Length: 96
Image (cartoon, rainbow, N blue to C red; front, side):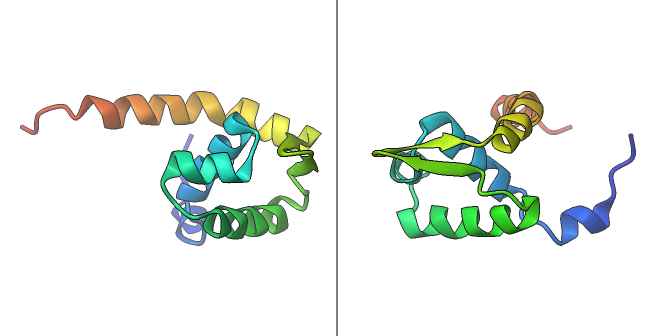
């Protein structure tokens, strides 16, 4: 598969990390704490992702959020790929 640089040029890949942490934590405030950012920063990322995916992604449910069906599909596809990227970053193999 070829990577289309134009798609990534117009998109902040870090927002996918934010999405996955909100998905994992089931809360915007908990995700913000985990990411060491403010709650409004996480909310702003979610606003952009909601527009991009044309879906609310998370529905408020008491003190947590419940993912939509689309959010479940995105997370299911995205999490394994991001886990691989995380592993590569964590390795920090020596440079030649």
